[in-house]
Amino acid sequence: MPDTRYLLAVAAVCCAITWGLRALPFTALTPLRSNKAVQYLSTRMPAGVMVILSIYTLRTLPLTEARAVAPLAGLAVTVVLHLWRGNALLSVFAGTAVCVALSSTLFVP
Image (cartoon, rainbow, N blue to C red; front, side, top):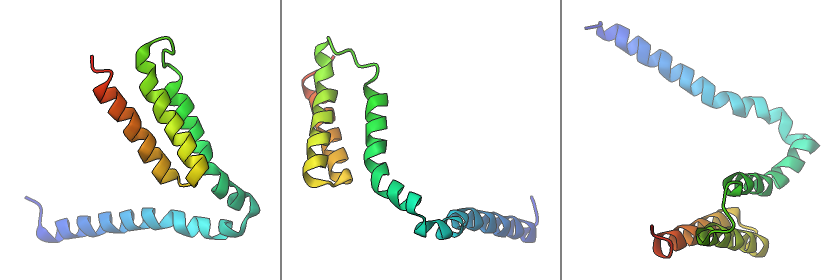
């Protein structure tokens, strides 16, 4: 069994490394906050990420089968809510809920 001082030293080093790695992005990004490109990307990225994830998720969806209705309905709810309310969190959660509810109730194998 290792000595108590050794274990405390290991825990202290682990804590220091973890804190440093979590603080590093904030200190590195501070000068970039006034950059015009970063400001532009911060307003456009949420919708862009949702589009990329939707395309990646739906790329193998067989559109000729009936089970494609649930993901497409979820996508439609997500898009409509995001355009109507502009709240990414609300639209993603509602679209996911619709997709899961339809998949769980209507298309049980």
